[in-house]
Structures are given as C-alpha cells and as structure tokens.
Amino acid sequence: MERLIRNVKKEVWKELRSEAIRHEMRMGEFLDVLLREHRERGHERGWDAIFSRKRRMLTDKEAEEMRRILGIFERPGGFEE
Image 1 (cartoon, one colour):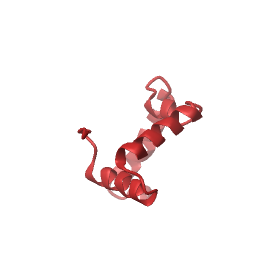
Image 2: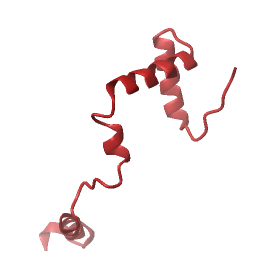
Image 3: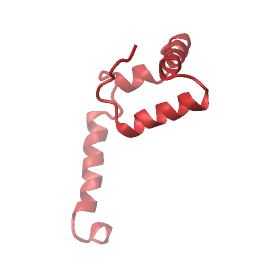
Image 4: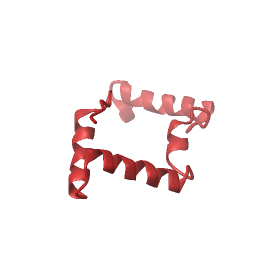
C-alpha cells in the first residue's frame, strides 16, 4: 500500500531513499527500522533538545550581547572604526 508523506524536501527524500537502497530495503521497511531504533534509544539526546522550545540556547543578556557584537559587522568599516 502506498502512502503520501507531505512536506518532505526533495533532497531529504532522495537521501532517505538512497539509504534504504543501500541497505537493500524498501522504503517502508527502512522507515520502520529508523522508528524502532529511535524508540529503543529513547530521547536521551537529539529530538527533545531540538524540538523543545523551553530550553533556550542563549539567555536574554547573551542574545543582546550577540546583537551588539553583530552590529559591528553591519556598520561601514566594521572593526576598523
């Protein structure tokens, strides 16, 4: 049975497909293996950190400092001022 997976970029789909072929699997089998391995590993790294909006990479103070520093590059002359 065929299924449609929406919003998958063409290059991502090609990469998934080539990995399935490399492992001599059909796409469904390959996705089953990926999901099973992901579940076995749990969420110790990766997915939760990537999709969590609660966990921020920078504090407000660090973000403001980063904006200030990057502003130097936007000015004519950059560091030379």
